[in-house]
Amino acid sequence: MTMDLSLDTRAGLPDALRVLVRELPRTGWQTHPQFHGMVQFWLERHLMFRQLVEVLDTDVKALTEQRMSFETHAPRLSHYGGTLLNQLHGHHQIEDAHYFPQLARLDARVEAGFDLLEADHQAMDGLLHGMAEAANGLLQGGEPGRFADTLSGFAGLLNRHLEDEEEIVVPVILNSGFDG
Ligand SMILES: [Fe+2]
Ligand SMILES: [Fe+2]
Image (cartoon, rainbow, N blue to C red; front, side, top):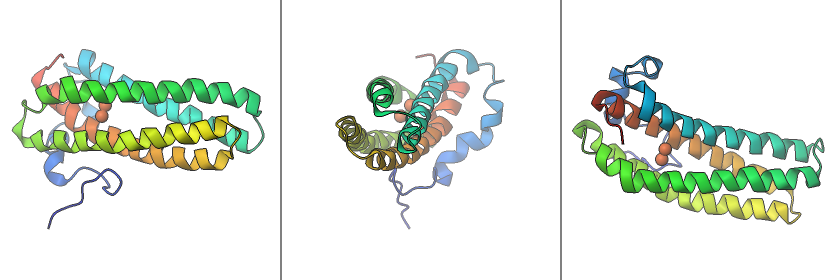
């Protein structure tokens, strides 16, 4: 039986790709001697993406419930939404071009995981595009509901990707001492 591992259907990494995170669970990452540097930096980038999504979500709820005016909301959406889309796009590019090819060679047990993560990035290109369109629709006076729905779908898939990526990448870096 082949598992469907596409970003929009999977509920987490397949067992075979969880081999490293089983050996080195998330709770042990921060105290690992190799945590500071690459891993800390990587996790902070991911945290920033999650925080930007959170801000956009809080804002669009406030707009919908008329606790925030359109005039206050619009520049915030432009700024935080633009930052999220640009930074995420750049982050995927550097992962695909620079980090993943090096990291994929470090532990054969999760090598296939990097193909999965790259496929996620490709899937997310379409999602980023959809987010930009929905944000522009709202900035041009459209209904907040459409953007709120698009954001909520996007947030779920982004979290799936970030969590799975962390469970592959972080143990590889901690085990190898890779520093970029
Ligand atoms: Fe990624
Ligand atoms: Fe990432």
